[in-house]
Image 1: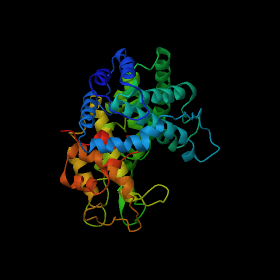
Image 2 (image 1 turned 30 degrees about the vertical axis):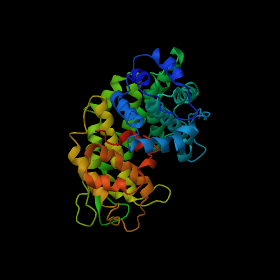
Image 3 (image 1 turned 135 degrees about the vertical axis):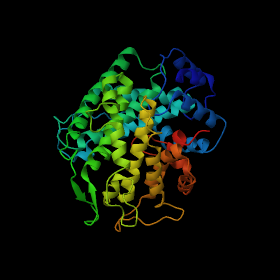
Image 4 (image 1 turned 135 degrees about the horizontal axis):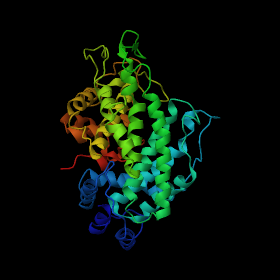
Length: 411
């Protein structure tokens, strides 16, 4: 378990953190808990060992992560959005503090897991407890929008990830742990409502087709966009994250096993990676990625960006499902291989142009996402894509943070 790891391994110098004595004091009396949402206890041990041994790419990724993210977050003061959101501003601006604070807490928790430095866990704890005691998640009754659930899902998942890695630190009192659990249960209610609404979309089970956003000549099956879309997968991930921390087995079963759930995790991945579409106009039909239909929008990204975004969610959903007892990575390995291999063609070396003639590919945003595919598949082509950039800087903001540090394949 994490407590044992913190005592047994060398505490890596993090800058601005507590002493090894403080770490031992905080973790010796920690409750029994093994992290399992994203990083398992075994993975934490392996990553810490790699960093302590100065092995690459973990060592460089760790240094870059501390400098750019974890270190600056040590002095963060929570900016709690008390909620719920009921309008008055554009909804994409409504949950910015949730995003910022949850990502800071997640980053600090990862830094604690890798180093054992209790200072990181303490600030993560302070952020999470403040939100647990003061914030109210937004339900569809508060603001009825398709974005209400998915825009909160990123923060919900990051807070669950942060708690998973710090709850064995010994910092949470019984009252604080109860507050976190209550907050996560209220968040689950809000996001479950959004997911259940999405699962009743009238297109599900129909042959409805629509043209791509960037081509009227190419069409796709609309239910793929609903079941295998980024909203559905983000909600699934957030619900699994929250429920894994509260012992909500009913919600976990709804996401992983329920026959009546159209957005069930395996169905979401299937529709995301094995969609019915007219291809890319260049000989690949169907394209093994549902987001081929998306057009370029300066404020949101482009066709290739959306496809890597979607493939990243599907791959992470497989990983989390694996960790929670419903293995999906192996059964979806062919689909993951086809999707990531297709996407690799748009990146160096020998990058092809996007099939969307008006597309703009944000390489800096897309490259870190390939780390998830490489972790599972380990193919030379995916490695070549990752080697085209600065691996030490790879960071996925919404769900995972420093992906080279946490997701580079371990021997």
